[in-house]
Length: 273
Image (cartoon, rainbow, N blue to C red; front, side, top):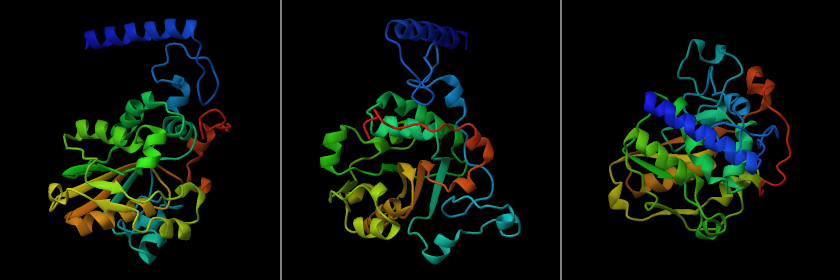
């Protein structure tokens, strides 16, 4: 324990010395960084990241406005899941997609700040549900064209960290993206569903036949991507498919005031978006 403390102390001093010579600002609040332990973020902003709590859909984790929704029926599902039951068995989403986490994900995903992979995965591990399970972790894939442009798959980097913690194998070879679709963020829900048709395929299916697959992704928006991946994996022979995502987009009226109070508005100019 003392050895770990001493090591962290030395790393902090080294980081402070480097930042004195090469000043770095916090991506979220623009304050100069010192011994702050998270790359590109000050300790104050990082500590503002709070997990989703309270009543939620038992299928997709969509938060409910009132605790009354689950007071008598703990397994209550949201309207979307009731009207259009997803193919995946369960989707766990851990944090609301609001600043400063939103800033961190954008910097990681679009700005090439791969040093954030480990601290973002640590957030997931900190909030991971005790009942989560799976035999094989599979990151949501990128099309080769986008992978060449970005040079890394953010979901794979998160999955590798989670795999070590859960002591489960990770495979980026069983699920591939075969169509270079338009970015989902620019589309409506209906367009998202149409955009993803036949976008994914499986290979080496024998490696996951009869196994429980846990999909890993960074952000849950409508669930269309996860649902399409689950369809392909189940058709390929997986016994079940669940999903775990770092964050999800949530209407601001569903985000707790304590989270919004700590959020700051900031342009993403310079993050590579």
